[in-house]
Image 1 (cartoon, rainbow, N blue to C red):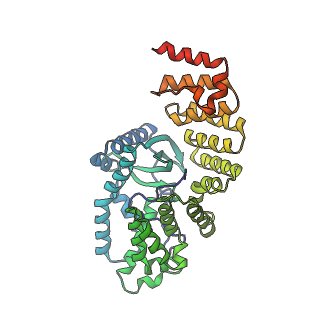
Image 2: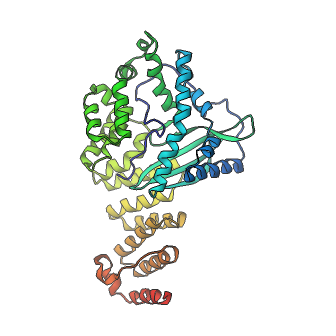
Length: 399
């Protein structure tokens, strides 16, 4: 499950597919300040990455303006001011620790966080990060930055590609039914799926809790107990997708991806899941096209180049795979997996000189315990070639 996104990091809450009645400006609405200097955005990105890698809650708090995010998320809703105040207080206390725990734990388990670039989007400079967890769970975050009254640059929101939403929008959709449940009669102002979510919110939150706590069987029971219209909501489907990741039933996972495409057509989240959707159907050409579309949205990522190469190998397009994997190795030479895919492509092309060059490059950059290639089926033709002696001489020279 290469592209299984993390979902909303804060609470596991994800926006519904249904329309909401209030219309708020997005973070990129026209009334925005002048863009920040590139150097200040890069300084922010460096501080944010350090805080997440070191598990530094105070450092993360210095990078994120939680109050500004929550003001935006809870605006535009008629509700009890005291309830709003309590909701914001609760999230101020839990939002950053939850984010820090999830990302830092992923890094501790062998994941990686990389600043891909600071890019200009709708007149603003926005740092774009890739978060890759063990098992190839992938997410991208793009941060909306503002300069505070104290002159410090902080993030006031961030876009999560795995949900196709800004976090403020995700929290807004969480807050909406909760706020209206606390005022008699206001819930009747909702309609469609928003009204259904509000009326079944306790079950939905129980499902979120099951996903968070990895309770597969209980989560499936809660999911099956929801009305069909609620089960087809984007919030619930993405929680269902995360449940599917708790076991190895690919058919189950594939069905969730199909339901997302069926019930949430055109939603950006489908771009993040399209690679898996076609891969599990062994539709390799379409899967490679899905990688390219995502890469275009991201504006380039060596990881996606490696992923494209892996798919093209399955599609038996070795020249295309060679181009993609060489681009990946050049763009992110510190990523060992890409080097091994290059070796695999060269082996399949019977390019023994390419195999030798790739192996030497790996040996120069990484600590590897080498096998005897004469005993490995995939390498037998290389081992029988004259260039294998060159490889053995390379290893002997190191001793």
